[in-house]
Amino acid sequence: MRKLFALLFVFGLAVFSFSALYAQETDGQATTEETAAQETTMDAEAAPAEEAAPVEEAAPVVAASEPASEEPVSGYQVMKRYFIDGDWRFMSFVLVCLILGLAFCIERIITLNIATTNTDKLLKKINDNLANGDVKGAMEVCKATPGPTASILYEGLKNAGEGPEAVEKAIVSYGSVQMGLLERGLVWISLFIAIAPMLGFMGTVIGMIQAFDRIEAVGDLSPSVVAGGIKVALLTTVFGLVVAILLQIFYNYIVNKIDGIVNKMEDASISLVDIMAANNVFKK
Image (cartoon, rainbow, N blue to C red):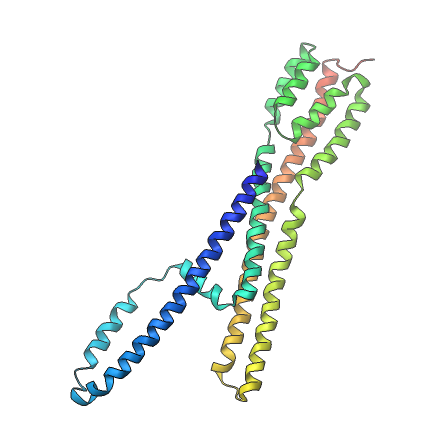
């Protein structure tokens, strides 16, 4: 079920992102065409107007420029504009890294929150059952409790008849299995953290190559010639670093969450052996 939610999240985020980018690009093209048409019309009307009344023409220009300065621009619109300006051929790969990385992070966070168990409450129930000599009842309590801690304690109780050494061995062996399950998916998150800035740097290099190609083709070192390539280079680097920083924050949170669960597992396993010894569970 968690994997299904993660896949649905990835699909929805990808569809929303690409549709927003396509709409922004279409709006930009339409705006460019409308601006070009308006400029052509204004140029056609400007010639006779200048001869008839050159002084009266200045008033509409000032009035038309005033509302344009009052239009608010949201941060999301600015981000989309810079994303498109950075060349979608490179920025789309960075966006894929962000979407997949967030999907793995969300799946891990949900899994680890489900795996978190109140060990004190669980050990108290086990102690009550073992005090009454009901080992099977204690095992049922562990089976009814979700999380790796309860699974490890269940394995220890299952080997109670073979002595404390067998219990400790079962706990250690099954604990390593649960550790692997908790850390599943972290490799992919680390991959996206590493590859996102690398893709940004690749866009930087390619953008600089394009800038030098334009200089060579034009034969003139002017700002208008090299501005496009340098802008692509800088934007891809910025977005790659932003994705890496965001995923690194989630990665550190996940690692800290895993460490907390592992510490509780170790404390609970030691407490289980003490509880079993105190209630004379081990058979001589």
